[in-house]
Image (cartoon, rainbow, N blue to C red):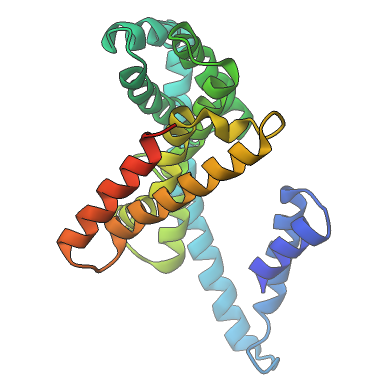
Length: 254
């Protein structure tokens, strides 16, 4: 019910995510007083309230520690000027070649975007990594989209995977195991930015809508093949073939 209320308030009610989250929390609090048959028992309610406060305290403490450590890293980058030097490091480490630079930029974005708000992650990452990609000939829009996308993937990428810690706390599972599952299920998220670079027609909907739709289908099929090859319980040979075929479709013919 709380998740339903959260989605309904955002997508049907048109409210902000913050407001929708508050309404969902209030809904969850009210539901603590009732069971599936809407009967009330004060002893059961007190036990639920106690367990809720203990669980919330543990999860908030864990998440707060993660965000605090990430803030320290971002502060050090800003105070020392290390963030500015990342651009020259990417250019020198990649040998002035685009694809090695993209991989280094993705790694830098995952580190710089550690559990900070969306706008802050984008601004930090594009200021230190964006110029390097543009100097290698990448169009500004593609460079910004690439940086923005990878800056947000830190939410499921260790070590500062905030969303993973929250999910692990909800199900009572080891966070490393949850992180591995999240990265496997979200494999396509890591490949979409690379697919945009290999297939620039993906972002030319206004100029060439038919070509954009064709390349969208091509990339979609490639991501499906790669994902099935990684996580599906098929024969190893079939899984390898799916990964190779998907990678060829994703990176060739763009």
